[in-house]
Image 1 (spheres, rainbow, N blue to C red):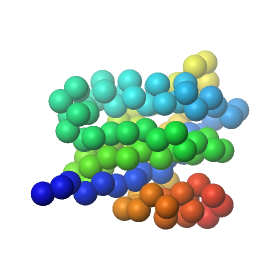
Image 2 (tube, helix red, strand yellow; image 1 turned 30 degrees about the horizontal axis):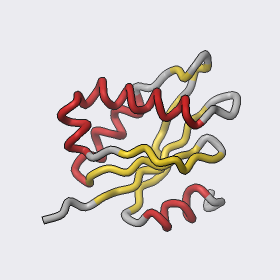
Image 3 (tube, rainbow, N blue to C red; image 1 turned 45 degrees about the horizontal axis):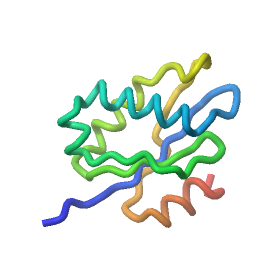
Length: 106
C-alpha cells in the first residue's frame, strides 16, 4: 500500500527576505542531523521549490510530520541572520496548501 503524503507549510521569521536556496540547504542539513539518514529516507522529505515571502512547503510521509516539525524548531541561524522557523499549516493536497497558506490566505 502506498504511504500518504502531507504538505507542511513553514515560515522563516527573519529581519530580511532570505535566499530560497540557502534556506533549503540549512533545512535539509538540520533535518538530516535530527532524523539521521535512515529516518530522513523513510520520511520521504522533499523541500519544494515553492518559496515566497519567507514561506515554503515541505512534502513528507504522514507518519513523519511530528519529527519534521521538531527538526524545524532546531534551526536558529541561516547565513548570518538569526531566524525562527515555525510551521504555519498542514494539508494533504498541494494545491490547497499553496492557495490557503502561500498565496494570501493569511
